[in-house]
Image (cartoon, rainbow, N blue to C red; front, side, top):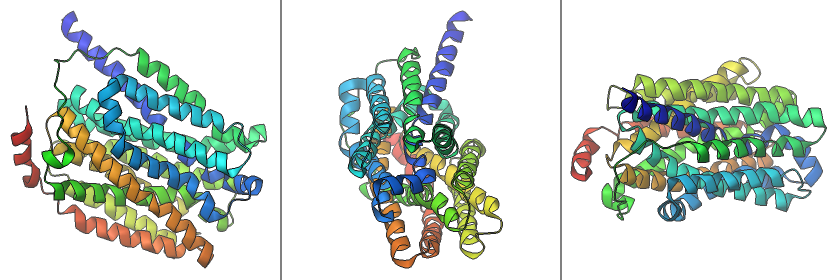
Amino acid sequence: MNASAAPDRDRSRLLAAILLVGLTLRPTLTSVSPLLSAIREATGMTYQLASMLTVLPVLTMGGFALLAGPMLGRRLGERAGIATGLVAIGLACALRFFVTDASWLIASAGLAGCGIAIIQALMPGVIKQHYAARTPTAMGIYSAAIMAGGGLGAAFSPVVAQRLHDWHAGLGVWAGLAAFGLVLWWGTRRPALAPRRIPTASAGATVPRRRAWLLALYFGLINSLYASMVAWLPAFYMQQGRGAQESGALLACMTACQVLAALALPWLARRNPDRRPWLALGMSLMLVGLLGCIVSPAHGAVAWVGSVGLGLGGTFALSLILTLDHLDHPEQAGQLSAFVQGVGFMIAAVSPFATGWIRDISGSFSPAWIALAINAVILIAMTWRFHPAGYQGQNQATAE
């Protein structure tokens, strides 16, 4: 009895550590937009240049995950690799206490992106390995933690900045969360597992290349919506006459709904290998929210923002689960996930830059929201390509 209880305790503690690590992955992005006016005033950034504070970490999250994440995982192992990512995030946040010009602020965004990339490349494989029978639930918890961290950044950064009369503090305070995550992650005992050989095959060798790229494009378009909303939603509502804290609270509302959906949709989808109906539901919720922001932004803001958040949270979690569904072997599934996230985040990085450019030339965010709504329609159509019959046979071929 005691022997069987020990692995369960270890898995519970590891899941708590995974949750805390997930919380560290978005405050460096979401803490910027509620403080954007103060940052632009202090640094002289244009909207387009300020978009680099979101574009660069998202771009780095993609490129670094694709090129360096799996290599670091093989060299360092998942424990030291994820710890390295937490150190990079903590240093980036600490640097923001002291930066005085735009170039150093942008450099901190790149450093944070590298840390986030390492963690995001390695964590799905960790989850697949330690929670094979409960992958949707564990991935939902991890995804919900990511979204919750984004909400914390949006809600508390402007409060900290106001209390301390310094926008640097609002950006830098998250170094403490990264340090706490590092301590818990490093000190948590791992459940015992039989040794596994790490496959050397690339993602393209374990699933059809066309399917791997389709998954990457799908993930990238989902995160294009997220990146643009995180970067510009507070600025959009400040343009509508709301204050920085109220606009940050709307972003926090969006992320709270993301947390709810990231937990709920994977749980609802856990018994059926066909994820498409739930993914389509999430895309439809995003579309409704975006249309509301276009047609009636001043009325029903909480409803529109909440609808976008429900859609984003559910589809982010389910798209990661959908990727892991394609392969049974944890290391191979982790490699595929690193490929999908690497390419996907590079695609997503274009979105906030394009949104900022459209805002600069048009003086309004409405044209950008229209483009994002079209993106949501495309995603709904793409969803029906992922019938489980297309990868169940692949699982049998690659399982060990």
